[in-house]
Length: 510
Ligand code: TNX
Image (cartoon, rainbow, N blue to C red):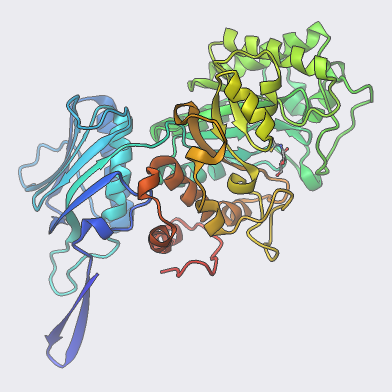
C-alpha cells in the first residue's frame, strides 16, 4: 500500500491506505484479466446493492450484503427504495458478456459504482467473492467520522479454467458434524470451489441415514477409527448440507464406496458380505479387506435402495460409487459389480463417478474416473473417452503430511509442502489427456489421522487455497512467487474465520 504521514498536532498519525492498483490486489484465485484505473470507490454508509429482479440474483445480493456486514460491520441494503444512497453496487444478469463460460463474470469498478455482470447467478456469485477479497479490512479515516473503505477501481474479466473445482471430505474414518461441513463450505465458496465430495461410507463407519435399511446407521454408524463414537447424518441433516452448499453454488457429490471399503455395511447386514468371513467391527486404518458379494441379488436390491434414497436428496449431477482398493474382490466380480452398479446409478438419473480402478470395467464412457494413483488406469480411462477428475495423491492429497514434522497426516504417497502442492500443471500432468477431458482437480481429505475441525484445518489450509488457483486460473497467470505473496495476505481472512491453518515457514504470513 501507499503510506502517508500526516502531522497532527504533536503526534504523527500514520494512515495506511489500501493500494489503488487493482492489479496488485491479493485476489485468489487470480482473475483472467485485470485492468487497473488507479482511483477508488469509497464504500460507505450511503452505498446500496441493486440486483436484477430475479430471485437467484437477489440472493447473491443478500449474500454479499451479509458478508460486508460481517467483515467491516457496515449495513449495505439490497434493492432498497431509500433515496439517500448515492453509491451503488449493481449485480446484473445479462447475456452480452465478452466471456462465454457459464460461471464468467465481469466487474467494472469506478468512483461511484461497482457493476458486476454475469449470465448466471453462479457467475455473479463467483464475482462477489472477488469483490469480498478487495474490500479492505480497515477503513481509511481515522480522522473523520465518515468511514470509507476504498476499493481500487478498474475492470476485471474472469472465468474458470476448469468446470469442476472440488474438495473431498472423508466423514467415514472420523465423523464431522453439519456445522464443521458448513464452515468448510464457507471457505471453499470464498475461493470459488463448486463441488464438495462427501466420502460417506467406509470400513469404519456408515454416515448417512437410509430409511429402508435402518441398521446401516443404528449399527454401522457407531464406530470410527480409534474407537470413538462415530455419528451420521440424518436425511434432514444431509439436506441441510445440500441446501447450504447450493446457497454457495456448490454441489454435493455423495459417495458410497463399494464393493470394497464396506465393512461397516456388512457388520450391519452380514448377508451383503462377500469375503467369506464373519464381519466384525473395525476401527483400524488398514484398507482392502472387505467386499460386497457381487453375485447375490440382495446386494443389488440393497444398492438400488441406497442410490435411490441418496439421489432423491442430491440435486447435483453426480453419484460416486467408489471402486477403489477392492483387493479381496475377484477381478471378474469387480467388473460385473461396477457395471451393474453404474447402471443403477444411471437409472436414478445420475452420472457415475468412481476412483480410477473403474476404468478396468465395461462402464460407459459417460462415467467419470477420478485419477488418484494409477497412471495405467488413467490411460485406460482416456482410451475409453471418459472424463477425468484429477486427484493425484502425490500432489493433491490433503492428508499427506507437509513434512516429517507434521502433527497429522500420512506420507505413503509423499510429503506435500505448500509450494509443492501449488507447483504442478494439471493440464499436462497425465500424459495424453486432452484438456477438454479434464473436469478439474479435486483435493481429497482422508480422515484416518484427524478427528476434529482444528485438525481438518491444519491439513487443508493453506494447501486447498492453492488448488483453487490451479482450478480456476489459467496456467499463464499462475506463478508461485506471485501466489505466495497473495497467500500471505489471506492470514487476516483466515484468522477472522477462526481457521487454524498450518503456518508454514515457506510463507511470510501477514
Ligand atoms: C487411499 S485414495 C485410499 C483411502 C485412504 C487414503 C489415505 C483412495 C481412493 N483410497 O482409502 O483413506 O489412501 O491416504
